[in-house]
Image (tube, rainbow, N blue to C red; front, side, top):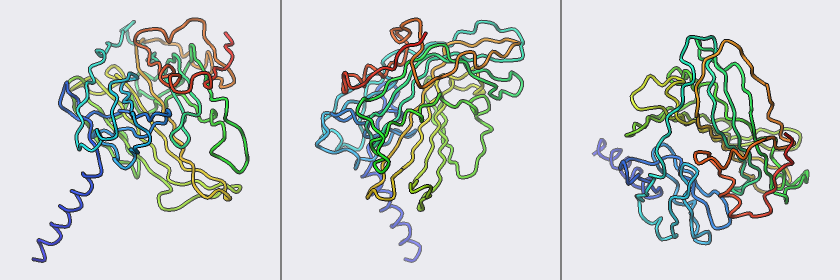
Length: 337
């Protein structure tokens, strides 16, 4: 009996956990579907599925229906609150085929240039605060696969016009300083990633393999600085590679990073949840002997572009999704070419 009781507790705990989660499954592959964003009716990003395709059912509130599901930067479904009573939801994720990365020059060289599209955005208490997208090239040492620099070709910066700075109301701030290019330091040696307090998971699909790395800090305790409180820091990296490959720069299909932190002024009763999303989609691989990093810097004060790159069919234009909710309130910074 003593041996059976702990087993029963484990089974019961597992049942409770599964009852509180919803799992998205691909109709195409019948496998879990990570990286599905659930938008509420006010444009809030309520949940984001993990590598197991799971979200916390408790995050879904009836006053936010209808819920829009965004996957691979496209809307794939609209669900009601009742739909989330199911433990498993199958969705049609076959929006477009994975485009092959173009290899321009395959000759041996000192550096590897990985060019691609990116988007990045910050939410405060699940609501969009600022957004950026563009075209960027990452430059890696061809031997060590370590990141040596970046050069941004074109980009756009957007912010919501109602953001203000009130010292004791951190939920109202403009957090555009948190907009960053996706941090691609690990993608060339992802299988060698070793860091304390990190949890690594892998999902093998029909078209690609995904690796998710989760790290946490300040769990169960807060950090105080200049009257502000920081708490519950978490970072999730998800890198996708061509199926059954060595997972090198040549094999990279997609890179996603999400950072979480809770912040408040000491006079505020509740923490504000800040989430930073950063995504990169490679389109071209080149080999050169000259490092031309920082040719054009990512300046948050303005946009900088010469072409309407976002109109390309394969560009991850989430700005159009956000604009459908926020309209004219989402303002673009002046374009300085």
